[in-house]
Length: 248
Image 1: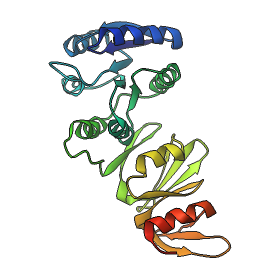
Image 2: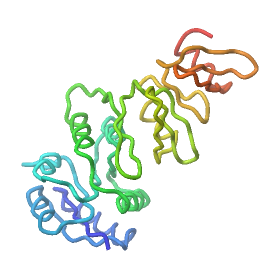
Image 3: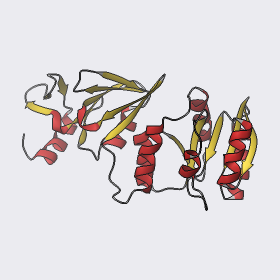
């Protein structure tokens, strides 16, 4: 059984999530239902949970402030939030799990399944999320968190040359000749990076426009990237390149 703690200042939300966990995730045992961050912090120390469902905006001490009082996070963490689309992208940049209110049963099951195979979040992930959610400039970070089997790699977005679809995975190709395989579809990655000067030029490729060196016309239109790699351009995507660059 996976021991869980729910922390949310809205009692109805706590009770509803506990009920949904019972319905959709029978492997989860809710050990504590907390309606304050102070109580939640105490229960985490007492019960050593395997997973914590945490609201961010709470009175007295918000979710980030509560987490900062823990010397080490040895549990999987799922944020439960009603934030806007900007904050959702902040969660995706940091590769931290989240559920949007009202919570969908399928999303809850997926979050728990991921939590069963993942250690606690990296401090840098939490700092990245905190800066974006609570920041005033609302700019997206210069780095993106890339989760892999044993942890998280943080890559500067400007160093990503292109992303390549591999079924339900995406391979990142970077300027230091490294490749990172992430358990996200290219569509998921596109949604995160499309406002960072990336463009989907093919069903299999998402490219960083800053790393395009040459466009080659002909029977098979393709891009020559800064690392010498040729990337095909789909016919229906050529117009989008024209819009972005005003050439071709």
